[in-house]
Length: 463
Image 1: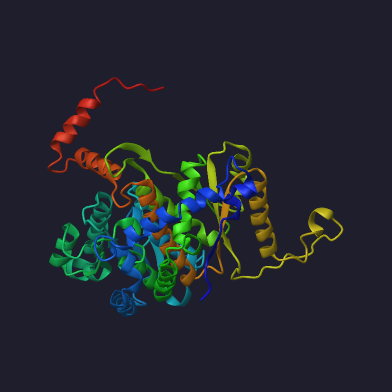
Image 2: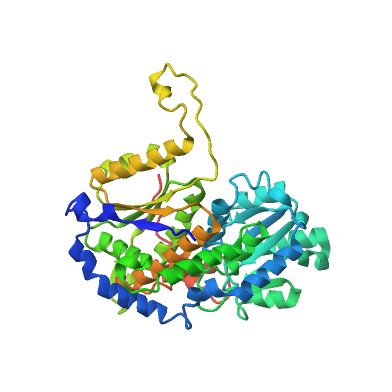
């Protein structure tokens, strides 16, 4: 199978200069620490980092495929009710591997997919106004089973289903993905008899895309889940080596660490030159931000660690962000996502051969222009001393996307070791959840609510 390739030439000092680039000595000095970091991550594969084994969960895949075959043709819509890791991966997979117009023209009787990843009343209210719940399968996804946003969505749509289909009939329209035995969702599954799938122990939300969290909705809308796992397996095997220059996950982790620690580049831009891959940038943003953005290191010292992820799309953002990237502060480094082969060939007609402003385009293909725009951005960044690397997909298919997902998950896990932070907790997110529970009057959070109310006594400053 074709491999995705990482070209980091334009991150090196030999190309962009000593001030903003990585020296060979700095890079080589990280070979030992990176190998140690990789070993530390892999040692936890059968303990608390079981997401490392997800590509090999054949029994889970078969269960998903059997369920998908059983409900095929029954629903016009599949709706994912989830947030964060339960939603971003599904959006990324759908936009990468289905037609951008899938929901307007679903092929072969496949359902549309909607990921309702917010509790904005206008988002849900508009969906309710325009679609029929009796023609919809709702996939409720929450590892903990207590996520306020997901549970509120579930309660809303369950009520609509019961109203339309009755207490018995509604059950065929809900499938739950949650913990194997813990949490309120698992209790509800037991009460209602809903179909359910498991988020395994040791698989946090942002590392769950290759579990039923991402595979089930993908299979329901026609994405090749088996090839996703096959690509992840290939990347896993490729990253078994402890040789830095042969292991893309180790290499990417080291590059990120050096870009921030040695080159003072705290902003990591994923610049997708593929419309299909644009939401992979959003998925990676959560993975990087929640994993590495930590107040404390593993010894408890305050470090306020972590790069800031930014997502850009070529060529769209050449006309909105590249001015800043080329001439603004030297605080960013760039990962360009490139694709060797597009699915479609779109020729550019000659049109006006006598006009210089159009004649150079006529007779070429749109892919030629797209590649020239991408390469032009890469050249402009490099000549301006802006560090950039390119991650090239042979094509955007399930196998290559599976490679990318596992590559980035493993790279971020290794980054956690290099940054000396716990890449698998999220205390900042939990603090916000606790505050929301208190404000909503959840039992057990009364003292926190009192603290919030006390703090809000100061006079507001508004204009």
